[in-house]
Amino acid sequence: MFQLVVIVALVTGLCQLIKLYVPSKIMPAISLAIGIAAGFTFISGTIQEHVFNGLAIGLAASGLFDISKMPTKK
Picture (cartoon, helix red, strand yellow):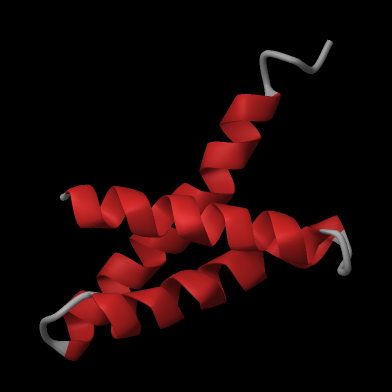
């Protein structure tokens, strides 16, 4: 479980670096793609488990930043 938390944090940081160079509109898709790649790279299991965990990682990485922006936005 702790491994997934670290992977989500790394994907979030990587997406924030990429966000400096690409439009913000396509960042959720990039986050999902990086999450799926991380799922295949760092998670062991079947192909379905790789894809499911990768989607979860990508969604958590993109949603984590959006949730942290909400309290500061007024």
